[in-house]
Image 1: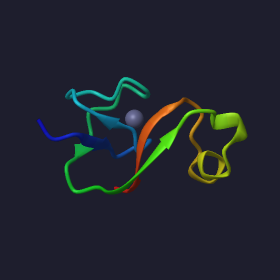
Image 2: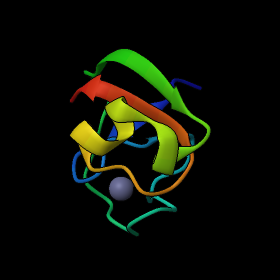
Image 3: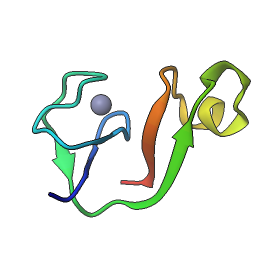
Length: 60
Ligand SMILES: [Zn+2]
């Protein structure tokens, strides 16, 4: 199964609902992947507004 990106927060998910923001607006047309391990110490996470660790799409 292809991972989908949440349109709201960008999280990559294998389900039909985003576990981070509980949104069901997902897209398969995402590009670029960033893995956030420590959101509080990551400049990318700050720029993207990511507060939880996980896998995110850069473009969604
Ligand atoms: Zn989300």
